[in-house]
Length: 474
Image (cartoon, rainbow, N blue to C red; front, side, top):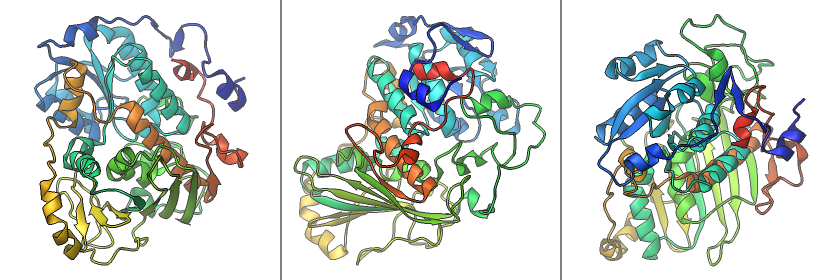
């Protein structure tokens, strides 16, 4: 019997070949596809896992670069209404419902894997792809649990010749280059606090917070491979409250508003302030708290210690339509990207975004690639000459092109696993605080929650479902 204790101790849970649903997945890694595209004029052959909704958008964006051929489509609900567009767009692509079968039968048909499926399922597909020598683009958040992010980081570090990219697309847009340039020019310095917020309506806001069990079972759609959809997660009966789309609402499957939008709001703050992992996390508010789905409003505070000459930083996250953060004097709204659907925010002037407090200046910014500005306007005017003197380079490639060029050895990805994985771990710690409606100290050196054994267990969650153990040892 696999227990959490043995699962954590062994790390690699199977010594023999991977047996998954009757498929024996080879451990041998062929470098032929890597050599085929490295520095060549060849297009990158893509296998796409998750072809509906956000996945469909990403596939079209990857295709639009002109650098890729879509050779394989894989979706557990292939044939459902939300997958038809991609099936018709790429009629010659091989089709699968189980990604393990895709690797077993078509591993020589693709060089890289795009993964646009629910948060909890990112891990096994990513780990198998890396073990098979395939480049990986996975949507954000990178993984659901702290352990899974850790193992994905290590797997990528062992294979530095493979390109990895996490889909926080703003990391290839203006805010990324501006933040870096302003840091290097000394405009952004001595930051001590950051406020981040996403106050639009979410799917779970209409759910009953007094629930004492998961939703009742419903008949399975004919097109759906529910067992593969669940992947390593413990068994749950099918419900349309889980699939399609609603999975983000539940602790067992998603990461709520924090994991979803934090990846687009806090990515540059986390990377360029060198925040790493926090030393403490505290849930300050959790309206409608329950054991199953995310709070209808939450406030989570992360404290990061001093890093070299950089002062300690307190990052406070706000979500929920009635949970608006305090705003600085001179705040006159956050510009929103009309191409990004955000729901209906409580305040028309407060879209998803952040405020950055430093010793001398306050900055405000939106989400994704939205640039920062100095507030209030008088301070911005006084800084105008210095700001104009800083050259902010233009992006050489959007996030999708950046990934494909990295597959070819022509660029480096801007959001690789070793960078984004730590941010994903920060979010997983925030989710633990939300789930427990509590705070805890985190040991950055041992990567444990030393004073709370119950909270510490959530770093790994429950052991994987039988038949899925091997992915944790790839």
